[in-house]
Image 1 (cartoon, one colour):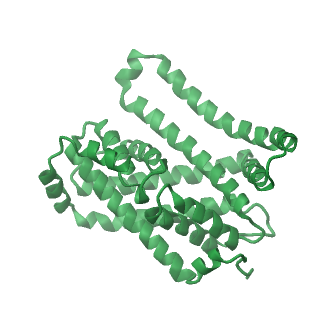
Image 2 (cartoon, one colour):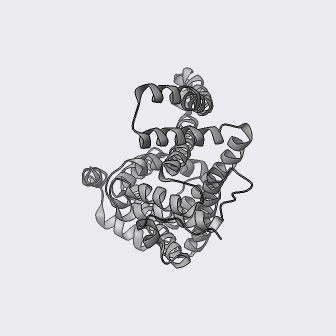
Image 3 (spheres, helix red, strand yellow):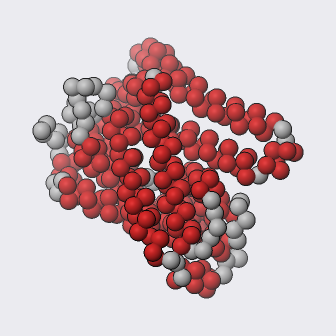
Length: 317
């Protein structure tokens, strides 16, 4: 699939022009892009730490959260089918006191559900806003967009109620395997933890800040290539690209990321050749940042892979 998508986005593209665009990038804009990347990593780590930490007596250190998150992202660069996500769950189960793999799977599902809702809202509202002629021709589109927002918010509470109140009884009746039951119960617990208005508000605030910083990073890369795109437009492009990254495919999201970026960028009047150059530059930048995250995780805890492979926990300090 990755190879097919790369082939499709390369059709009718002037390869020489792509190389020329990449060679002419304004490197002075990469320094602020690096700062934006660092800020996005810190916010991502803090958001995950809040999802992991629900007890004043069991505060999860920021450093351990960063190591677990970084290992997962680093693993996705080299492992197919998003194998790094499994590595992250195992690593955090070792690093977080009193945790387990099933608990980390629950946290992962809750986090990605929250992410999916936020990306979907940005994509839907962005496409409608930037294509207002479509809105004028189809007045029901505004109602549809508001419906998506309402469904997203109600869905978080409904998912929590369904998993927490109804599912345990069904599981007992079905007599499912113990580990599968533990995973589903931990998914329920993770949704319960973010179902309060305060928790959702904090997570939403961090997610909005994260989306703005990521859009700024993309803006700097686009400006370095001489492209004129606004932050709202780039927020929509990044939101759409997130769905490309979410598809289990080749290591490093090769092909799926480029396809999502190219077709999303072309919605705003950018030709395919320039869009492909932008996608390749953004992907290279992200891959570099993901590799650096993995390197810093190894530097902070050189024996992390040994810990992950062993059936033991990280000592509490």
